[in-house]
Amino acid sequence: MPVAKGATKRKYTDRTKAELLAAVASNGNIKKTALLADIPRTTLQNWKLGIGINDDVTNISHVKREEIRDLHKLVAVKALGLLQTKMDDCTGAQLSTISGVSTEKYLLLDGQPTSINENRDINEAAIVSYAQQFKLEPEQARVELMEAKRRLDEVKLSSDAVQ
Image 1: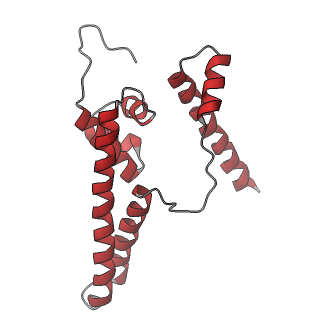
Image 2: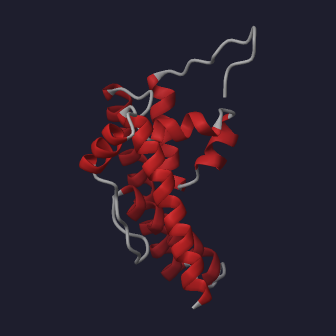
Image 3: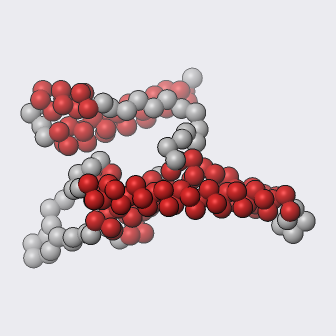
């Protein structure tokens, strides 16, 4: 979306970009993160795709992800310990929820699966080939291929639901 006439395009520090990318990695929700951070969703989507991101942002984001991952692991372990000792003081559901959410976040940020599903990433060779075939910049090709993959996944999910 073009910037309105007379408006200035907002600039974001590398640290801000990295922290928001780490937040998306933790919660898996670009729309919610963008809304909470008061930035355009498309800006955050582009950053996640590597558009407008430099090596410093990538490195800072990796460190932030590890920090968040370690915090989630700590919370999960502590909640599991409390679950055993505090059964009389609170419901098991309360501590189970804390433990489950923290465990899922830890696994997600550690790059481990949180559910069993098929994941087919688009490889770089496919992106380059697509970009050359349609005379696109590689990043635009990546965006288009990711969108096509998302649509195919939706079709597959809806056809699975019908069966």
